[in-house]
Amino acid sequence: MFHLIWCWITGDRVTAIATCIYAFFTVLMYWAIRRQVKLMRESVVSTFRPKLVVRRVFLCPGTAMPTIGVPDAYPWKVEFVIANIGGSPARIKTSSLTVSDLSDDQLRRPLPYAQETDARNICLKAGEERGFSIEIEKRELVAGFRHMGTKAANLQHQQIARVYFFGYAAYADDAGVIRKLAVLRHYDLENGKFEFVGSADHEYAD
Image 1 (cartoon, rainbow, N blue to C red):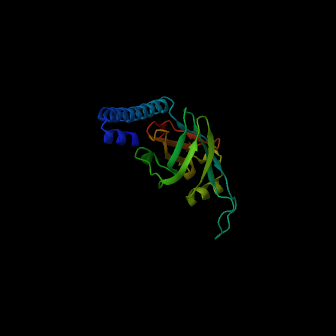
Image 2 (cartoon, rainbow, N blue to C red):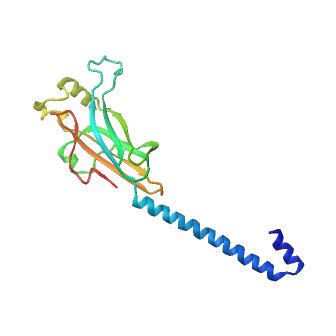
Image 3 (cartoon, rainbow, N blue to C red):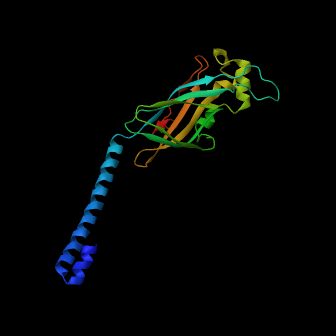
């Protein structure tokens, strides 16, 4: 910069103009390279994009004999695993996962998702999986499991025969693109696990 000013003051206008042109094209090349690197990075992320899936969804029984007016020492929960089977990191931004009983009519309509919560940017690297759990908030379901049991083929007409684990999570890739994971699993009274329902509308990974 000082050289440019000196050339201009001393009358060496040709050198000053040449320096300006050189600086202009240097800056132009810098931004072109940055843009190219950004496009290449986005292309790599798009090719090796993250993909989250839900695995191993189980009922985790809690306190068997409750005390009136006292919270359960061991809450009834559903435990599950989220795995990144894609080729790049995924950062979970928000989630809405719950356990509830659903009628056939409710399954044909948009699901009654729980309130969305902040997932605190949980990062899952490519190939990584992590265990999570949510508490069963509906007291009627917990009471049903306590009184009826968690596994029995003769409970098909009870409320616990219509129990589902469902919801979604929004996650971002390294390029900042927001993707969505949705899940819908039905509680199987015979094996005590939440099984895949087979609904492409309610279970998918973008």
